[in-house]
Length: 565
Image 1 (cartoon, rainbow, N blue to C red):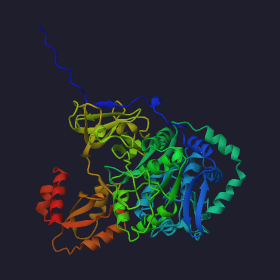
Image 2: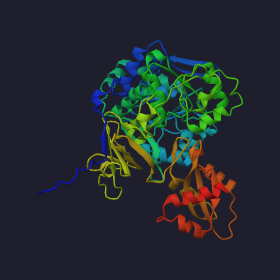
Image 3: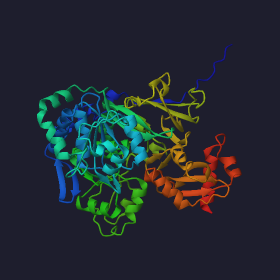
Image 4: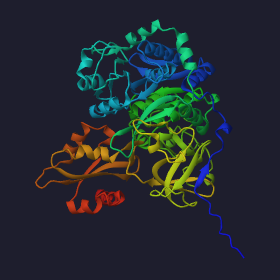
């Protein structure tokens, strides 16, 4: 008599076929833009406060301004797969620059406006952009001065003639706004005027040749390495997520969506959530270039915003703003009932956003998710179920073997929005033999196919919606005089998710001051990467908790305890 072993279900879950997903339109950025600007032609696409009042573009304006940029880029030699850098806050020209690049056949490369000189230098070197379109200043950063410091030739070489050994592909720079005060950087009107020689029919013909599998955008994200990684995505992946987010949020043309957000579109999450879902549903983007809580409240009030997109620490800042009790936010509709803004006296909502989700920049955001207003018992405290076309598996991190259902391991994903690859890294080094991307995150799948994200196998710190590489911070910290050993960790925080904490062992006799160290870091790192706290430890403490053989969680626990006392 033979006995059969019971079948062990493995930790693999797939969504429905992509072909069954409702609401998808054209799967290229030029096609997406043409589709929404034709469908919603006379509707308002964006509103932006300027020194002269409020700038408003209709969907037709968005198309025309994007075509203008595309013609200008063609005049500067941009063609298929040419890379165009966009260094701007959320403003009208950001949209026309990114969509214009797509219409010209190029690859848009959004740069973070939080970039320091060292970070921007790295981004320019690895991205290979031939054109850089920028805002002259953002917050307190003068980017024209910063760029001429990095490459002095920019100050004197006429636009289009730059020959830099540091950035050998970069030839042309242009700034938004008025006249350029740097000889080598063209002003926006001059940049656009060059496109008059390019027939718009050529732009439309170029756009029509774009394939869903072509390269569309190059975003950057801090990963397990110490420097930001360039993540190349195809038109199909980006377009799917733009259409998909509108469906996940439950937005329709009849809702007349008015989306406020001050988070940079150069982050893939905000690109998909705010920009993508709003345009896909025929709504209007209420643009705020940099976050300012009182100004944001006034803007939401004046523009009757009904769909705010913010990070947790911004919600807290809004509730604490001096004009919190004075503004009328009664138009709010697509705002989660658990956010502070839902507690405003003028707001009445029972809406729950699709916040139970999991994703990465490598998948151009969400891989698993539950749509807005999904019942809590269906969600079950999970991070969602695989979206159409996606497959999730859980593996043993060391061997890569798929684990039985409900066992904890490394989350691996594949699907139609998965990146084309990291810049400079063979795809075979980032995907396994089955085409899965190993995320470095820990979690498990249940028998209903729901994913439960439980933390990170890697040490990446997620603070205020942004990713921070501890290795990047430590590389700068270790160069500070008097620092002997340093380990940077993330410590849990109520509104930011985590805060960056530097743990340092000083050299004997060194006089180190937390404020001076933070100032030193602030000169070389973006503000969100600068540690909120600097803690000093004896060498034996770091030896027990901070060596490569000891889990970062141990050091994090020690830092948490120190901060609590």
